[in-house]
Each structure stands twice: as structure tokens, then as C-alpha cells.
Image 1 (tube, rainbow, N blue to C red):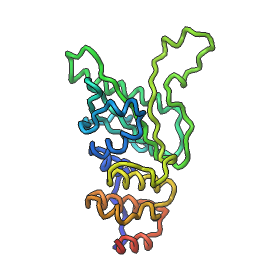
Image 2 (image 1 turned 135 degrees about the vertical axis):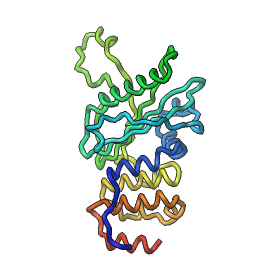
Image 3 (image 1 turned 120 degrees about the vertical axis):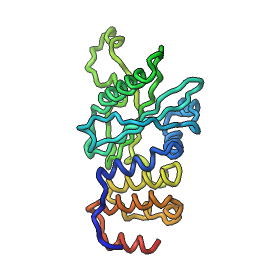
Length: 238
């Protein structure tokens, strides 16, 4: 394979979007990541992507997002995935999530002016971190509240599901073939294991659609930490 520079712009975002904007891939992974009491009430086969992005432009190099509409019991809900690919932990993720959720609701009202209720949002943060982060996942934890009761009623609150690739072993990542390989590759990039057997699973790679396979190869080539000669040998050996 000739030596070339990867053409990817924002490579983490490109790979995440390519794999998880497809509802079946997102559903196959997330249904086992949300609390069972919530997951069981979602009609996962009817997950539908909603066009648009809500990430602050200043954060475009550090995060990406996807929004889905999904039936939840007899009502409709939003499932919002914030993909974090920054290196350092950020204890203020919940604050940014609140901002993005407000934008989602504003857009909903703009498109549904006759609505009398807001649809719930299930916020999920997928972190491509190399080490496990200890950060608040409850919005109210960001406040310095006095011990005495009374102020809690004035504080907005929500919980988000934090999924950290650093906590999930390669062989425990579940989902579709594409979803599994995308997450293994994203995890391996941070832990510098892009040439490991966990990524070069020949049986799994053989089942991937060609566009995803090419994107994964470009993503690997984009990393400065790999031996390009070993990479070429692995590709030629498939």
C-alpha cells in the first residue's frame, strides 16, 4: 500500500459519525448501556436519526454529537449522544449538555409550534478517554448547596449516562460488526493499540462494508504512533 497522508479532517468525528449515525448500529450498542428499566421501554428498532448538530463551534475539535427520535412507551423521546474525544477530563460536561438540550427543545418548538409538552431527552456521553474519568453525572452535583434544605427545589437537575471506552475491555464491546469495530478502533487510538489483534480481527474486518473499512484504515494511518510498514503488512495479509 503506498505511503500517503490521511485525508481525514476531524478523524475521530468522521469515524464516530460514519458508524453511529446508522440507527441500527447505535441501537445495538446503546440498548445494553442504558439502565435496563429505561432500555426495556424503548422501541429500539424504530430509532430514527434527527438531522442537525448542537455542539458549540468552539468545541468542534473535542466533541461531536448525534440526535435520535425514539418511541418510549406510548410517547416520543429524544436520545442524544455527545461523543467526547478530548484528552483531559472535563467536570463541566453536564453544563454543556444542559445547553445542548435547551437547543434541542428550542428547535423542537420551532418545528412544532402547536406543541403543549416537551419530549424528554435521554442524554448519553460516550468518552474516548485513555483513563477513567471521575466526573459528576448528576447536574445538581455541580452546585455548592448548603446543608439546609430549601434551595434544591430551585435547581434544575438531570442525570446523563457516561459510557467510557477506557472502562470497557475490547472483547466486551457489544453491537453490530460496524459498531464494534468503530469503538474498538476509537479505543485503540487513545491506548496506542491500533496495530493490536483486538483491532486486526480478520473475521470481523471481513464482514465490514467497504466504505467503513477504508475509513478505519485512513483513521489508523492518521495516527503518528503507528509503524507504517507493519500497517501495510497487515493490510496486505487480509
